[in-house]
Length: 156
Image 1 (cartoon, rainbow, N blue to C red):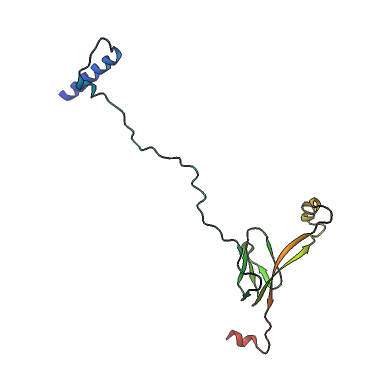
Image 2 (image 1 turned 30 degrees about the vertical axis):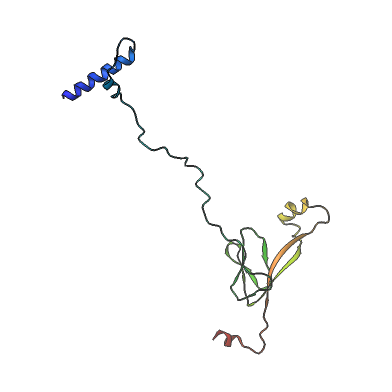
C-alpha cells in the first residue's frame, strides 16, 4: 500500500507542475515517470479492394476449323451467344457447343434474318442503317463417311 500512496503523491506533484509551471520545479526523476499512452494495436492497411482474385473461366473456342473431333467433344464455351450450333452440333448447359458425331469442324458465317414479329427485329434491325446485313457464326461438324463398316462393329 505504501507504493500506491507514493505513486498518487507523485502524480499529484506532476499534475500541479503542469498546471503551474512557473511556480513549481520538478526533479529529474519525476520527469521520467510521466505516463505515456502507447498503441495497443499495430497500424493496419485498408481493407478495401480484396476482390478480383478469382480464376478466369477459360471461355472461347476449343477446336479450330479443320480439326477432327469425336462425338461429345466440346467445341466452344461462351457466356453470350458468339457461336451458334450448326449441323451435328448441339447447345449444352451454359451455352457450351459440343459435337454429336465424329467428323471435321467447319466454321461458317451466314446471313441472319430474324422473324418479323420477334423482339430482335424491333431492338436490332430498326437501329441498323438501310441495306445492312446481320451475320451469325455457326459451328458445324461434317461427319466422316463410313463405307463398308457397321456401327455395331465400331462399338465393340
